[in-house]
Image 1: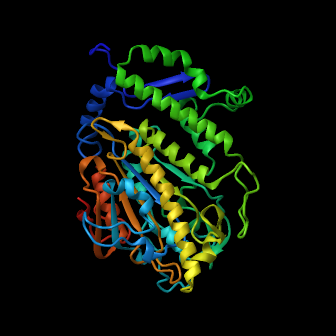
Image 2: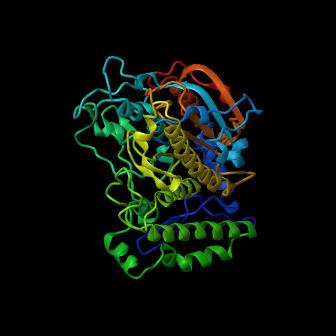
Image 3: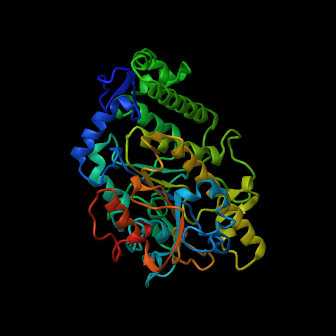
Length: 453
């Protein structure tokens, strides 16, 4: 490849109803670094790559005795629940002591599951009402408002749970609280997309607004990949790339095709999964593959700089999904109210460990994408957590929290950090500042959390 040959950063492979954004190639680096200079300090890494921010939420608390690591600092020992993350221990920070005080009743009575979700990223007390909803802007939307104009999509909101927006779901609280963790404003939640295919079509549809219905139907009827429509452009681009960039292009296009295949194989999501069920209404559908597809799509969105901000509400708090694939046929919510029963506690730990196993899959995907001298994970901050610790008590103190990634070198991972009771929003204020979004306050925050440096 000629050293003078450069590709503009915002280059797409375009075809009928298709626009495939490209990852960062070596041939793009001059323009990437120029964009970094324009963006200003904080928003990008020293190498000029964008920083990414994501929040992964799992419901119904945890068996805290088997979640919490032993020891502190770099010499800590992973707990049984965190063992699936052993390969990523050096890439993540486990934090104990963070709290969401606004998720307690504070005079409003029951409704801890609704408040856990509504408060998790906002730090604000949710108004107890089935129709007059009121919470606060969430950390992801603060970031999206500040840097969303630099990408095709300001943010992505994902879930594996069918949402119920109308009516009351938990002790008089609107269902909107339980089925959303992202809030654009105090009264407007960002409803997540639950169908992987819809998110995929949004990312790779023409013009960033999705391919036309006619083009999509034609492609599906012909059983074609989006890659089939850009084959000639791909060959032309490939001929001018260096060895490393050709390998990166091949890996990227293979990942897109694999996601398409997995979407086709996963069947249709059932309308509901009743407690005690041993399967789903569509034999092809699996919850694990659904989660993996969402993680794959997030990776592609970050890799192509289609967005730098994402949230993933895996399941809603208070949900009673069974986990037969993890060895638990009873519903998650009913299992979480363990009453000290050893069998229920063991079952809850199995569910917790199944979730951390899926999170390990996501971290592996991010680490597989090379960026400069590091990886996509190195240039990200990924929070994995819950709005409840001990579910028996509906406790919102000492929340299970992991921060994976290095934020472009500004975070030193590989540690277990214990803090005195501290609002979890202090962590978010710190993360926003590491993203270049200058922030001093969010919800009930009292400062930032510099201990993760």
